[in-house]
Length: 147
Image (cartoon, rainbow, N blue to C red; front, side):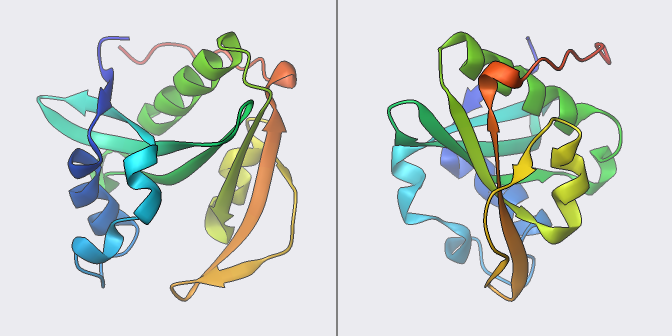
């Protein structure tokens, strides 16, 4: 996919800060585990418009973190395309489970992809989250191209 590319965590930070934690500084949006994660972005006109990090938790279990899409590109299928492309890639690599901590406001988005609740609600940086996961053997979501 020509618009979906590996990026550095530094490339994620401006969008992460703008969308997820606008009241924090860019430096406060750095996760100590960013250095161990892979970062992917959806690039339009040399600009990262959607991104997230993929953290290896165990050999066959990855966690998606800090999924952000620029407000002007939300609800246009870009985040969905990025998400499904990466999930399909992880499935092809025989990754068994993908977990994430969903903001309560994003639970329905993740349910579209058959993620299910897998833990108790918690608060981080004054925002409520709930753990979710999927067994990738069950993932079979095809996305019609927006290009």
